[in-house]
Image (cartoon, rainbow, N blue to C red; front, top):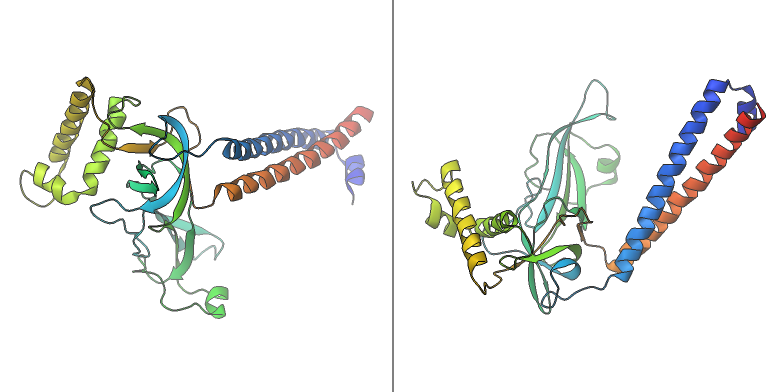
Length: 308
């Protein structure tokens, strides 16, 4: 049965429902289409800054991902060192089969790392960022924690008939990966951000060197920073920020790239600018094609309602 036959046989209530769905779908496709085209145009038109000469505010940077001094960042499922990770641990619902999975645990790294170009380094705070990682792996196993990646190359049988009730999915950015990042560029002590943001960034920098943090704030010498000691560290960081702000010529201790306060896009991507721009272009065109289809359907339905 074709669309014209269905419209001829459908009740008025069904036709009105289809009309409203067509309008909603057309509006969504139009919004998403122009949104992707706008993102692609912004990536192409906005100049990429060098870290040393970057102005405070919204910037685009390119460089190599670098681990900061201190404890390494380790992905929890694979055990691989990296500068950023995201993971999901799921268990198969035995009653409903392979199609339904229950999420047991998930998370993403919020530890800071650095991006380096030929002019300098900048700290990246990945909290709330949209991340396009170069590595994404998924495998199955028998236990809640896999203890690392599966050994050896997986056979075709392992891919077609995976064993184990648990599914592990992990994305990572390894150290040394070339990244394109865009976000709010600010210097701690530079006066471009609030004292609360400077305090958070300074604490994040202190946390990277756990040994120094313990020497300074582990008053009971138990090898850990408890809540009371952490509050002491937080107060010390805030006092240092306020003292620096009260100095007539306070130096910038480090530059930080973070999520913009105005809600602008915060992106960390292993894809180069040209690839990202083309990706947004094709996605935008695909959504606009969907708009034309939805608009055409809406036109046919409107004609049916108009003719009665």
